[in-house]
Length: 379
Image (cartoon, rainbow, N blue to C red; front, side, top):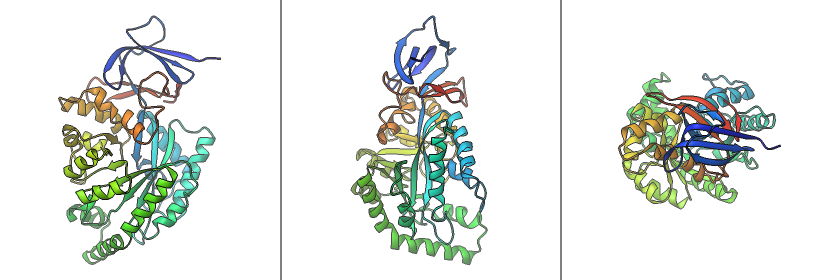
């Protein structure tokens, strides 16, 4: 039997404008979009209907799996907790970041992230999940064992993004030793000697492994059709390297020059939605709003606060005169979907998946009132 739902008296956030009207869902697909109201259907009371948000980079699952240093939570339970918060934030497609590469100081052991990915597949098979989940592997290229970790995912079809990261001090995210000291010395309570040894080990590992691991991982992704992301590019040389490696997603560039060069090269430039909501980077790097004003911001990620992904577009539309709400929401819907080849979602267009969010925002923080994935209410 055909299943049909009509939503009326809504503000529909299309790719190019916001329109007052009605939307028809039939068998999980958007079947009609019309201006004006109808005499039938569910009254949205003037609330916005936006496409389900597409989240390309969130560390939130790792936080649920390891909620305290040394603590590992049941993987299925962690996934369900994460999934519930993701869906309630209006995110219907999510790429869960799993960190690969460890050393004596930090990181998950070989096999841990493989087990989490297996649990994710199990949760999907058992119909436990509200959102549509994929895997984003965050590969620490300066780690000696990152290729061994990556080998665990050779046959995992859930993997759709691989990011190439190097968090060694003195470059990329941590160009300033002040921020690196805060992250790794003060928070961990290291002595001066212990911190000096920690820095030396990280820098030596980066010099030894980063280049060869970047190339090996990029080649493996090209063979499998996986989207490659660069992480924390700071210089034009970093961007040139990313172009050579076939990178499509520039995650959190740390300079205006790198962001502009990445955008010119056709990469989708991603910044954190918390950066927008807070009014700046928590690590002292460039502000996402500045990139939006310069016309080189393409994608937002919730990173570590899921609700920020639906909040940030409203903030951008409020603060930037030349950026309307439709354009702001493309940063969290249409563009991220296109970046990873998910052409069946991300827009309110007939024929696409009925991944929908009903949201009210009179001022300040928006309220997610209902969420549907493929026409089925999930939150």
